[in-house]
Length: 114
Image: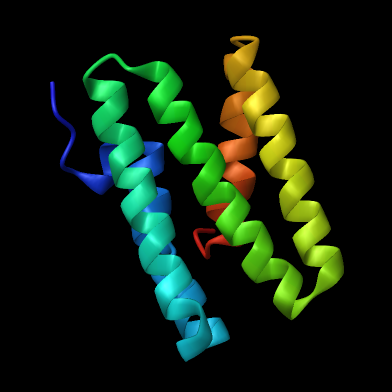
C-alpha cells in the first residue's frame, strides 16, 4: 500500500522535516536538502516495490549527502552524522529493527523534529 501521509512513515516525515535545515543553514542547504528529500522518496518507492537493496542504497546516498553538508558546517557534526549513517545501515543489514528505529529518531531530531 503506497504511503502518502508523512506522519505514517518515518522516512517521509524525515524528508519533510529536512526543510528545517534550509531555515537553519540557509540557501547553501537548499540543493542538498532537495537531493536528500528526493532520494528518500525514491527509497520509499523502492521499498514499496519490494526492492530493498535499491532502497537501502538510496538511503545510504541520502545520508552521505547530509553528512557532507554537516562536515562543511561543522566537521564534528559531519563525523557524527557519518557514524549515525554507518550504524543505521548496519542495523538495517542485520535486521535489528530496534536499533534502526533509534537511529531514525536521531535523524529526525537532527532534522528538526522534536
